[in-house]
Image 1 (tube, rainbow, N blue to C red):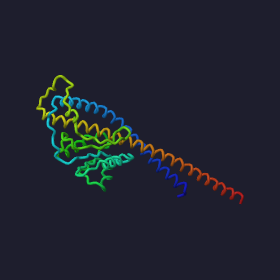
Image 2: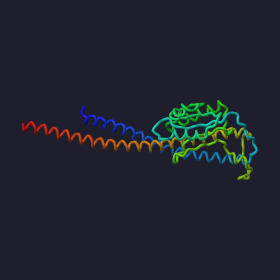
Image 3: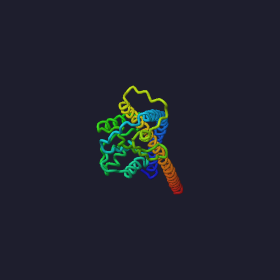
Image 4: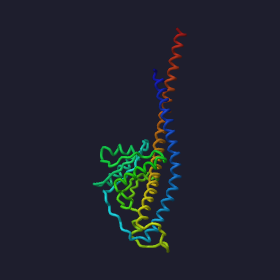
Length: 273
């Protein structure tokens, strides 16, 4: 195989790789648009629940706080797939800044788990969502783990580290809902909310629903941030690939011109001979 043939084969391989990366970029773009719509609706749900919770605690501020019955839990939300830049590294660095002893770690996302494996003892490893449709399954598995380990949202003893969708900002969310409202006895409404359950039972069920709403909100934001990172990463890679192919094409054309010149010289030699 001549050098020009080798270059031609190499350019063809790079072009195929570029087509694959372009397809991945387009899928990420579609996923971002879909998730953005889901997130908008979910933010309305969370806001409505927060208004309900504020109303409730304004009239029932003296409900006892539940004791912390288990070590603090940190939920680290990484990515299941690659090509997302520093997405997982940022999560790990944030955890290093907040690392505490006697802490349970729940690592979500295969790529993040691989980064944590050599340095930290992870309590629970879980697959992360690759698309929006997988988020309910991940949340269900996470909820089962929390329930099995008696980690209740009313204890406020677990924290979530994730990438926020805007500017890939890293967030640590400590789940201790309505703490400020419970500490301040004020009423924004004249009438107490009408409950069909005893306040303690209502609180338990309400916080469970609120937790689910917040988790969906967080996972949507995390997956949007991941796909934004992937879009930027793939855009850069595709741009470099196109420049590489252009450079190799110039080299291949130069070699072809040299081959043509050599062929002409051979023909002229034969004629002159």
